[in-house]
Amino acid sequence: MSELQTVASKGDVSPGQCVAVDVGGQQVALFNVEGNYFAIGGTCTHRGGALADGQVDSMTVTCPLHRAKFDIRTGAAIGPPASTGVPAYNVVVEDDDIKIEMP
Image (cartoon, helix red, strand yellow):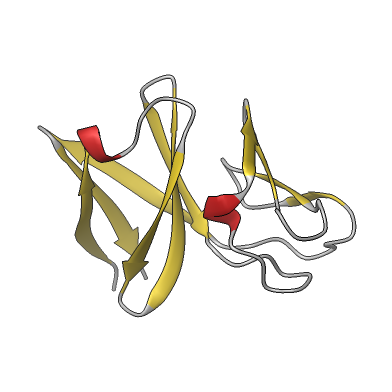
């Protein structure tokens, strides 16, 4: 059974930016792309880099450690050295609250 958890407000994540949030003990990277919000696992599967500290380019985030690339919509690894993706989470915006659906 999944649960919606409030993790931020709209003002916490500027367009084109990402913030790290802790959701039930899991690190999650929360992105704002032109007013659309996306959430994926916050730790790179290659060597554990913090994806929230990575470079955001359109729908891609690049890990700051070794430049692995991930799709911020699906969590899929789309560039080496990472070969395994990260989880993607459903994001719900209610008024000013940003909520993430966790399994």
